[in-house]
Length: 119
Image (cartoon, rainbow, N blue to C red; front, side, top):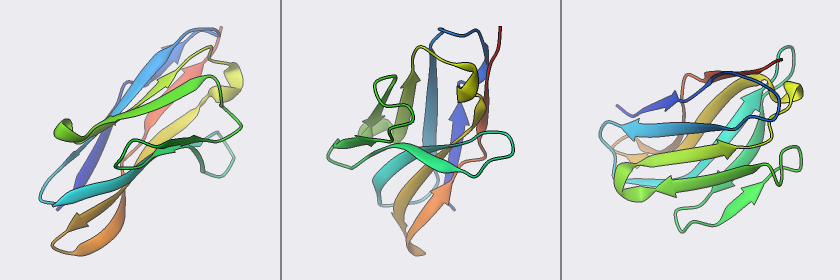
């Protein structure tokens, strides 16, 4: 069974930085595209950034210029560096990955990590 576990969320002040991490564990053969989503209170979940297995990154305009996505294939980890945080960045941040396992190729989600930006 494949699991994704996020970490790094917390309460920060406007202008602060935060680094989120997500690690995949379990039995699988390969992790393809990995991505970060966020879901602000009362809103739908949407993608913030994604990164392919080759390291090509894409960013949503909502946080472009303030986030950097990276991955460590040897550690099955994807990270999201959040900079110059704003109160409107408050959300639950989720990791998503396309993973090949004995069950086939499928998307997996983490449980989410809360980021709260408040003065």
